[in-house]
Image (cartoon, rainbow, N blue to C red; front, top):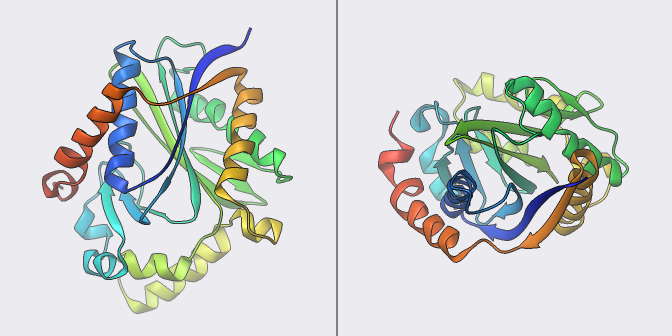
Length: 254
């Protein structure tokens, strides 16, 4: 029997609202005011998010981001700095006591990421899970994922790259020297790929989202019911965006 989950298609928002809504959903699921939830979203304008334990000023060239109109935000999940531009982002929230919630973090990534692997297969792309938390195609990373565990729930979110502008990314991220920058760019171009590169054509946000929805349905045996976030979640997301995720206290605190 399929698990009853909520599916949210929330479109494109700025970084602060996106992180606020992920947290608002986490709080709603934790309080049993919402069922386990799968959400798809995009970033407008583009943004860099850093992991919870990173230092913004150490990782990101803030003046370059301002110059290019790029938002900068700290996530509540761990991991490294991520440039969000041409991608589909998903988030999953489920309680610890759900049958799909592995207590072991590696096993948890492995299970939940099967939805992405299955979704990419719908697009004709053969991908696999690469521990700890990546999805690779032909040995090259196409998806990075991050988790946090709080309020009795797992929140996992991640990206599936539609395209990637590595040169712009390294204008926005700090690297130790010009020499290191050239090597870092070459290294990422070798290690990272995107759907447009693999398929040799542009793929739309909507087409990839629909394939991923189907992949999660099948891989995790989900009955996904399309809904909208509740009024309380939307209000909480706006509040969190303003008071936490857009604030210097939060973003520059380390």
